[in-house]
Length: 68
Image (cartoon, rainbow, N blue to C red; front, side):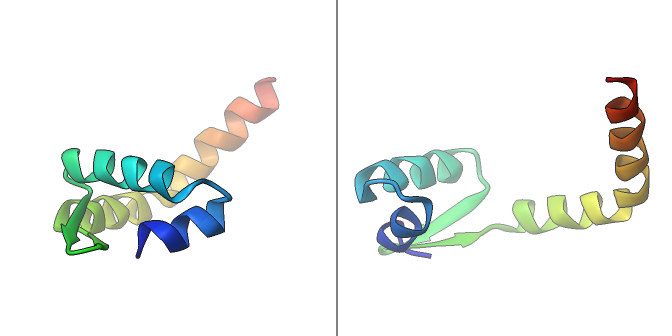
């Protein structure tokens, strides 16, 4: 993704979107190649772990929502 396209999508200035993307690079969730940003293996692995436990997560969310 490009910072400018993300900015348009999120209705943020391009520079703000770029700073947010750079923060995700620092956390190791994205990598930058030129002006483009790509997910890292860490991001993809995180998605897989979430998907493995989605039923449990859904149950917890419903339980806590009912308690409200």
